[in-house]
Image (cartoon, each protein chain N blue to C red):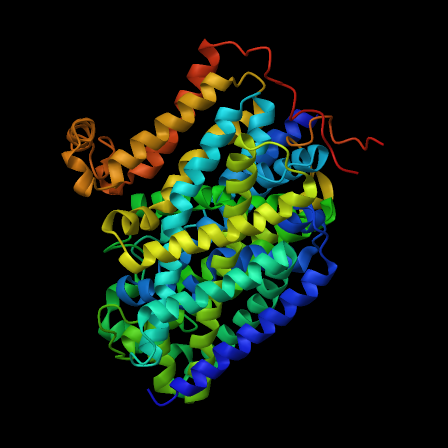
Length: 513
Length: 74
């Protein structure tokens, strides 16, 4: 590729900017855990908005989303709108604002900590952190794999995969370990603004070249008329609802997003972010996904595994602009991973390590947190070299896995009658159901106990069609599991009573001035 | 009064979620100003939701979440 040098240059420039931001952040960061992981709960509207956004959806905006629209039609715009513009925004209030109040009153840094305190249970805390790391680490592995593959493709194999993925891992370790939450969020903000600008420039450029939206849409109407009609193909009502619901709830429990519920500086920041959220969803996804769909009508051909947006831009915009977008997308991948490393580290060190080790001062804890970043980065890098099929599958189904945690936690946040036993039942029950439904057993199937589970798993259907409304299509196991988790939490709580160490009113009586 | 308002916002939320996908346009492939009509619905609906959210933050923010009735406690 002729512009490979340009792309590498842009990526290098991005890394330098990120490093500079990280160093500035390092200078203003105290060596306490609360400051390292949460920037002392001080974020303003713009930083909170963009850090959540960049963390969540960055690479997907440029690659995954347009690819989906290219292959299956632009209805993905509605899925994302329902998911992120509406359901996630409502959860931002219902889960996020509540967690912010509780976290601020008690100094919580992680979700597990908040639950462990309320239910007087180290076990529950370790369990929630453990489940989160189980889904998170393979997901981080996929990001490294993506970045490594992209560098190899960019340099046409001159930089081998291990060196590309390893180099990016090393950079993230350096940068995240040094700068903590503040540095991560600041670069996310730059990233987010950059991304928004790029998407609109790309839209303007492509539309100017092809003669405006009407011309582009007419071309699509000729090549793929089914793309313009709402629904059809992949998009059954059940698919749209299951995907939007399980991803929106899943996102709230992803450590790097859940932790951002704790970092707002004030109630006003929460309110403003809440109002701006649907607007940002609109501004980013409509142009990005329409470009993907239009590319189909414009006759751009993407091979298996190729991303459509760079191909489209190569066709209609100058090479340097396409390079800028590709480099931006790679940087975006990193901005998701760095947040995951930081949050994963807080779960690992505070919720797991610190519960077994004693005598760790607050000062030393930031140090342990940095060690956690290094540990998670190296583990997931090591795994990305081998890319075991089961782990790839875990990473691919991570959103659904996190979604299983959401409803038991909503119940705990709002219902004083929730008991520890209820939480265990809901959390464990839904996880078991979901993992049996979606994960392959691979080589483990030779272990006798697991063979039994695998036999059980074959009884679970891949999707659930409502007998009274078959026309809606099949619902995914993730939403069924969420319902199961909700039912188990409520039922087991109703049947058991709280032990003396549980504090039913821990989340009550909180407000912000 | 407060309960009534909470129920009211609950209903508003249900409507916002339920119509985020324009089910009544299912199968429609009408194109308006260069975009499928349902994309325009999406644009308008999210803009409306943002406005509703704004109204919520100005009036009843804290309802259902701040359990002391939303009064300022020193």
